Image 1 (cartoon, rainbow, N blue to C red):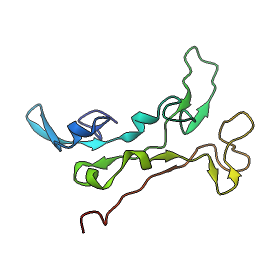
Image 2: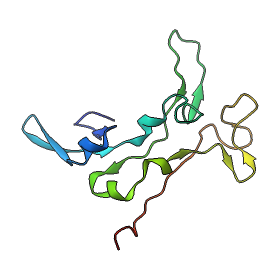
Image 3: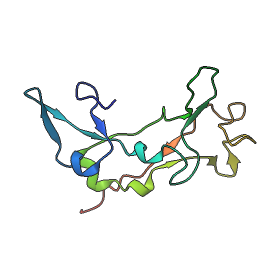
Image 4: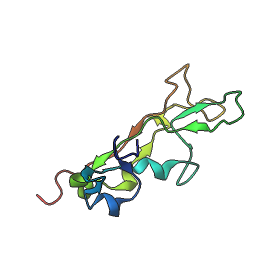
Length: 122
């Protein structure tokens, strides 16, 4: 996800705005991945889009499998504040009583939503 040979999706808008960097003599273009800001309970719960409580020694519990990435050329049309992990659809909660995705009524993943203001500057 973050490697230059992969998607090169990083968390810093200012770096992504430079569009690319040279890695081992080759130009590699960035994606901006604003999902980094949603790990943990800040700015608001839930702490991820998928919950898994395994029995292994290390468990992150909340995972961020559902993500969005955007190229530098579209950064001006994207407001980070518009990106949300949805916990309801209208009046229907997507969470169970334990505040985890309700896979019985909805899905085991929580959806994400964001706005692109493509009219900006027109």
